[in-house]
Image (cartoon, rainbow, N blue to C red; front, side, top):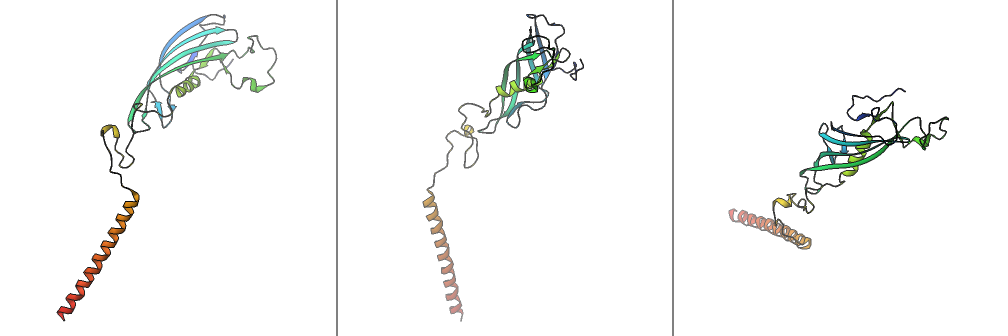
Length: 212
């Protein structure tokens, strides 16, 4: 059977050594470079090329290979409250079945084509004994990361008036001004300015009369 998977890809694994005897097991450890867009884009993610440590257990079962594993990496992003850069340990657990392409759900070899294509839509298959872990790993890492990461649980965020980070200035505050008084103060200021203009005009008229 031909395959489009490349065994040189660090996220492609070969099961030939495991074999197809149910009950056989193999453990693997591998450190790979994180692929692009590995996380929640624009929020928090494992930077492209950062190390990702994988510990895997491959088990041969009747209808395929059951893959159980853990991925560990450092994800980076920014706090949604104060916008400070943060780093979080991403520990993702996953388990996925990669089915033999020539076996049905009961592990028996298929002797007739499957009429319902939707039956296989959500299943992952081995290709010439190889499987690609990337889609499984990507989903597991995304689910392990917080949708709204914070630098600390009690982060107070930024001041809504001046934007200063509140954690940097304990006790930071602005004097509250009642908007009704602020409006009256503005009105009073306008009246005072008007009175000054009138007074200035009157003084100018008096000066002109004295000169005449």
